[in-house]
Amino acid sequence: MEMRIKKGGLFLLGILAVLFGVWQMNTLSQEKATVRQYEQVIDKQKQTVHALQKEIDHLRNQLDTQDQKERSKKTEPSEDIAKTSARLTETLFTILYSYQSEESSVRERKEKVSQLVTSSVLEELFPGDVEKLPSTVSTVSQLDHAPIIYLDPTSKEEWKGIVLVDYSVSIAESETQSGRFLYQVTIDPKTQQFTSILNLGEGNGY
Image (cartoon, rainbow, N blue to C red; front, side, top):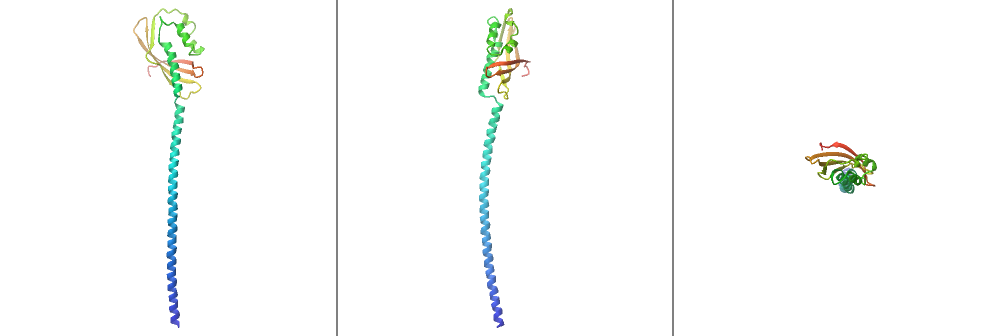
């Protein structure tokens, strides 16, 4: 009788051991399945993050490009401003520097210039009654090329810049002499007149 009980106990222990082993295997399988699911979720999240990062980088590049364009607009004069200021500058300094005294009087040049500058600037260019003084010396002057204006890109309400003038002059049929002057100028875009012209002297260093 005692032997039967021992055998029955061993048999139950064997069954329990087998059941425990099966349960443990099932548990491990479930855990592995769960881990695989987590790994799949993590992979999808990584893919999503990668796609979002690419989109963020693309948007950042677009913003940087737009920002560069905006800065460029702020630091460079517009094409219209550049063309208009160049046209006004060439017109004015052609009158001032390209002439023959026997064919174009000071009065005539002063009248032409008066359309392009304010009265105060006109007085500086043609002081007093200079046009009434007799011209006893023949003078031939001409621009070597169109004057060059370097605009200040920060000036909007007024166009400010530096004008480079290269010219040649012959007095009393003497040998032609070349010269260069720099001017600091301000132009009113509304009236398209020069509101200030300051002679900075010879620009031989430019």
